[in-house]
Length: 180
Image (cartoon, rainbow, N blue to C red):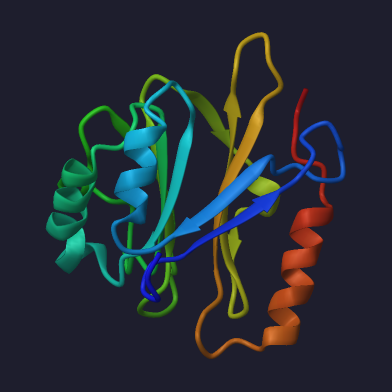
């Protein structure tokens, strides 16, 4: 592994109710493609990208998704979408639903999730919000005969206070997520 490629893994016990996250990895460069090629089964894949303006970068984003060949069960979280209203069909992807939380009072920011259309989900309103300190969007994915799963995307605006952000973040993590 060279200096430009890095994988960070965080492992938690999925049976420990205090730790809701079972496994998380952060990939850079070509390691993501290699990882996905090795794990082509029916696992759910969750990806986050800071798109810095979906209006101007959506084509590059779609090109990226097509060339990495993500598994069918992939949820993509975007930050800094810069949407000002609910995206129209211009921002849709084949076989995907888009859920957004936009800034309404100023430029920039915004978070979104692309969720495969075969997954049933609902937005968790209690922890989906935007303010000057944090931007968050969470959904509960309904999985028949199994425990539901919560997926979210969080963004810290560049000018926000780190201590206040951490306080909001800890508060988000302390809330019960599952409906069943």
